Image (cartoon, rainbow, N blue to C red; front, side):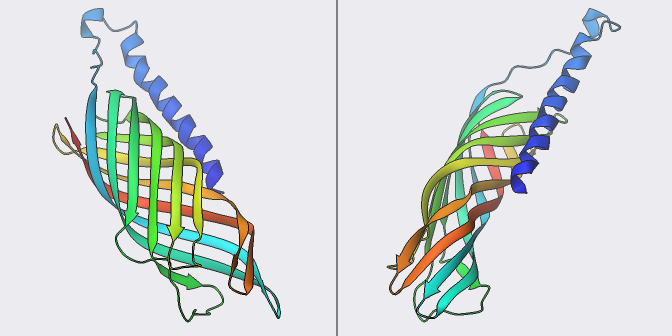
Length: 222
């Protein structure tokens, strides 16, 4: 279902851009009163706290049969951001996430392994960032690009090391001319995953594996 959210997001951004163009083309207003949109361009950097969730649906086989399983892993992550805004409507941005602690994971079966843990998460993302300035201070934006995600841990507990299409949606507020607060949702990965082995077990993923993050951060515009 998450993939279908992308369509109205893009439509909203396109609609917002056309609405903002109307005041500058209104023939009923004298030319001397037409507001002139300012063309701004600048680099920016940022930092954020990322609430990251990894979900994995799979079937595993042991000596007794097949079992359905759903794994959820939660990471506290730090996100570093660097970008360049070309004008009020478009920017490019690079992001890097890394976990600040071991993942807190649970299994739908309630089974708790005797050993092993998902101890590491990191990801990068490169995005085109279309924006719609609702007011001078408040903007909404989308993120469209690619990401690379790694989720692993102790020996035999590697879960994911893949590149993928990535998208997101967010909002920002300019507190000052240079300081911007933002919050956004980013889907880093959502796809089926190859089967892999762990000791005497064989694991399969006929469902899918997804990685999502919600980020709360601050940016500095140079």
